[in-house]
Length: 285
Image (cartoon, rainbow, N blue to C red; front, side, top):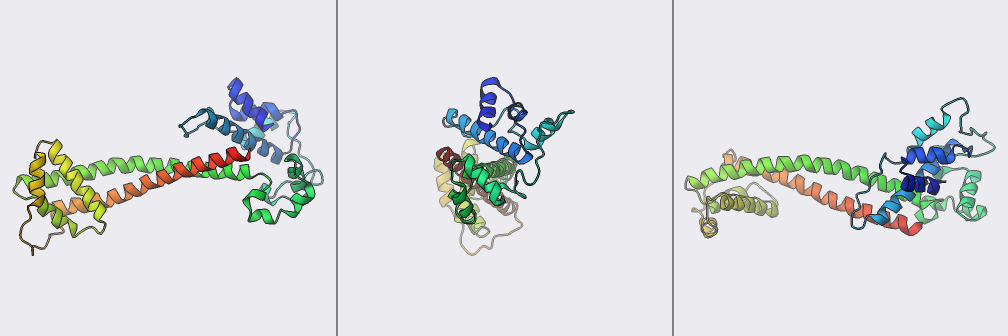
């Protein structure tokens, strides 16, 4: 039924929730069974979009994924509800999660997947530690994928905000350095003074690169002048002033740059894990 609902979404353009409702409304399923249909519809629709996506892996559903809560409300709407509220002896639904289903419930799931009921019951305990023995590992992977995508979306929002802040502090730092350079200071002096206030050499290098680009692109210095100014350093022994505008703006830049870099790395990790999870789902179906 989940695959049929996904096909209606694909072929008829029905929102996934509506496709599920239309598919199961005459089947007299229990609430937990409707939830399972929603999960399979989402999984099948996702894999179908994944196949068509090529190198694009940011997949969204028109109308959103199948929502079990909305589907159940729609099925119960009216004088003849389509939900079969079966008794406890007819069907043993999971308490909180299908992974903790009773032996009877596990047998039904095993039968649905072509696995012997007895073997499935014996492996119930082992499935808690062996992902491949779950009644349906695709559902676990789909839940993981949704969690990863949620984290990715949150990270993307933070990265956008961080990008704006990065540009602000970069601009402030470069403006302060430009004022000092035009006043006679060398880039070498600036580099040495700032080096005392950052523990990560890569952040110090990034700041100097940004300053050099600003001075060059702004027409303040020619490339050869940049090199000469960088090599020009005043005599040692001068203690940098932490309250100096250049130092204060440099420290602010390195803090924001460090956070921005962390968010960029997180985005890369999320994209790779989402891709790997989708590939695993594809292999299991």
